[in-house]
Length: 441
Image 1 (cartoon, helix red, strand yellow):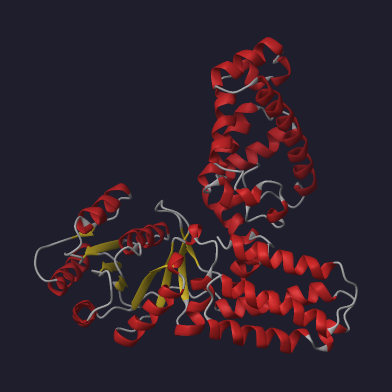
Image 2 (cartoon, rainbow, N blue to C red):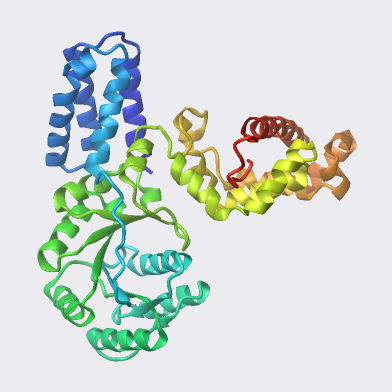
């Protein structure tokens, strides 16, 4: 996500770090490069023009030029203005005072609308809500079956019926009231292109559903096309917020950086993967931090807390203090880490992750975790509990059983000892403050 833009900005600010005091000419030269980087990232031209003008107004003032740390001041200003451009603060999904809350999901075919509907229902259910999804897309082949499958896999009810879409929605709302569903998500039909027929149908559904929120789903990878689609929907249907899908595959970020400034509508969610648990609330400040290579520790902590068992984590701390941490515990933490999402995405949330060798080439992926898991599972119970007994012959057997090499096994044993020491030090430093239940890997 935003890899290309992040790397360009890192290079631009890296050049400035070699200087002491900054002159106005230095700032102008850097801003010209930032402007080019944003345009190459497919950010809207007018948005770029206004953004650079705002940056320059702040960056050539005494706040920067007279500062003892001018480069840090420039980066701070860019971070603040990026956050403003993206929306300043998180835009939450409001709930109706009298349930059910009705959320209408709109968008073009191929944008990931149906999957986004299920992902949002999944989030709402985790929050303690009782959602119902209404399958109102009667045109796309298998759209209803897709929503039903997603519903069955995640224990979320789906309402479907025959008839016109607006009639189905009306029946679905009555069903929700009878069954006590407090949130209703309406998956509407899309088209390959915006046309009067689609907009007319959306208006009829809106009249029947009387939605509390209309969310527009757009494909982030389509760049300015996504912005144009959003503008067209705004004129014909109007909507309350945006869901940007396929953000994990968007290396440029033009849509995310342009869409709020152009449409005036907030981004509420972003999808960063194919699985149902990969829809995230949109936090402008965190995304700005990621773009500038500062990481996203808050999201990382939230992911860790959502997947960890606090009592088990406390037990792990005690084992570390007693120096009883073994490969069984190590494997458990590896599995815990995998629950948080793709390893490449998790690592990139760490501050300075862009400076990790090989990360720019996506060298870290789930296959590395799988290989380590295979080696640990090829050990005997005694070997996992007492790694010190793993001799040369044992290492050969483990390598053969896991489809790896003795070198890989040696590397794992060394990493295990280093990790054990590091985690022991962390528990000693943080013991008095109490453990927050985070995975220890």
